[in-house]
Amino acid sequence: MGEIGLVAALTLFFFPAAPQTLAADVTYFTQDGVTYRDTRHIIQRPVVTTHHEQRQQTIYRQKLRTAGPICGTRTGRTPRK
Image (cartoon, rainbow, N blue to C red):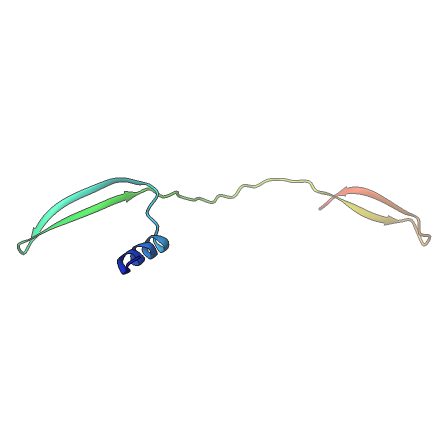
């Protein structure tokens, strides 16, 4: 692989081609006797939005209860507050 091939491979590795090119707008103009070609591409990219919603949720967890100095224990489920 020559130097040009290596540069091309590294360029494609670090700067991959755009997945979708929708259209190319090509215009020509002359400035100081030199004709230039201006090519513009429209690339579509996904737009990510974030929004917040209020939700109400009830979570149940076990709560350990003791019945006095003797080690009698009861477990029950109570809603978390």
